[in-house]
Length: 119
View (cartoon, rainbow, N blue to C red):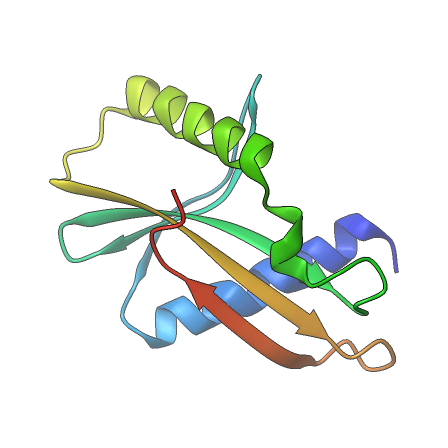
């Protein structure tokens, strides 16, 4: 399985997790010159931008370890581009991360962690 397929599995798991908790999907894989926003969700009157990281092993660290200061800066910039282009009508904005661990043999979710307000 390549990294793109792995990322897609992680996004699907994160999307199911959020929808089970009442979030509504607004957009998926928003691309701009600064990067990509994996999931854009609505929770009440709040717009939630979700970065999803998935791994099948901890060889290179936990999935959330891949979200450092430079990644956060690029995410915030991509959020600004999205807001400028789409002009959504929400009162609050939030940037979250979801770390997904997948079994290396079955690709089933073995762990999922949701971090709210990461930056």
